[in-house]
Amino acid sequence: MRIRLTDSPPRVAAATRVVFLYEGRDPAAGSPAAWTSGVRAAVRATGFTGKEKELAAGGPPGRDFLLCGLGKAPASAARWRSALRKAVRQALERPGRPIVLAFGAGLTEDAFRALLPQIALADYAFDRYKSSRSPGRGAGRVIVVPPPGVSARSLAGAVREAEAIAEAVRWVRDVGNTPGNDLGPAELAGEARALCKRGRISFRVLDKKAIERLTLDAPVITALVTSTEREKRREHQTSGNVRLHRNHRFTTI
Image (cartoon, rainbow, N blue to C red; front, side, top):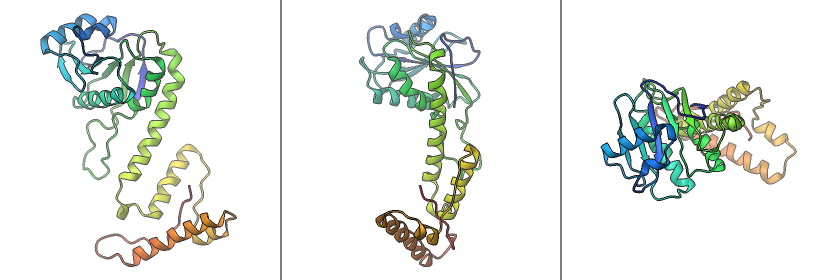
């Protein structure tokens, strides 16, 4: 997801407004000032208490909120990540609607910066073998309101870094989620080559002979060659509908 930061909640029609609240007598107290009255009405209407993992949707007509409970303050980084994933997954079930994430009091700037890669990666789904893409995949942009006292402009660099991290993690997850019979060494090298081409990174594929010629430490070469031989033996023993890969070329990382 691409992140758009703004210092105050925007007025976006038909948006899914997500707000994170602590457990207490008045959970809405920590919400952004522009939303406090609407959030308080949603809390009363739904009986929301702010308990950890609690989710509730409600609010005035045309200005409904998705309330996400954090439990007792303060919330740990792990609790924040869990709440964020749960809330965004719920919000993505309404495809086509803009998503606005608002962070209220109780979150430091450093903690918020650490959450940015999680936000950028929140719409990830492995759907390579599905006939249609998952509704949440590639949801586009998410509008994010930082906690009070944190300037959106000061976080421009952090957002670019978070989106770059998310793109790399997506690639690694896609590769890791692809079964070995459909992503052998040759295909893995192809995936790596395509990635490097997009990033204008120098790339070279090494076969067994090239690896043996490298002037690396002997244990490293031995491990690489042993791995190569193990793959070849495994292929000779494979039959049925599994696609065979011969004359492999290998990528060293």
